[in-house]
Length: 128
Image (tube, rainbow, N blue to C red):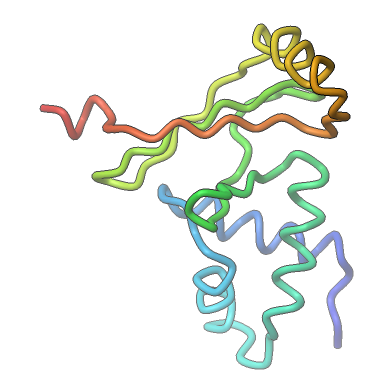
């Protein structure tokens, strides 16, 4: 029996929340296949697309992975710090940056539909 989309999204989000590092879609699929061996990749990709559209998860474009949203920022700017040593991701609300980002886009007549900022570096724990 097929699960409803909302339940599937909840399952995928649960897997993301259970891990402290970004996960690829296939890592999520592998985790979920432990309970559902017949699960296919398109099911996970559809759930991830819905979760990112809803702002409940973020796709880290630079490393092709996903993390759950940990901030409340409707129509805001998530700023994601990605540690290149441990792989951890820290999320911040970059709402104060929105006017400047909008001005940059307006200057080039670009119609931005969403803003996500990724910052790569080394976290405090890895610097020690």
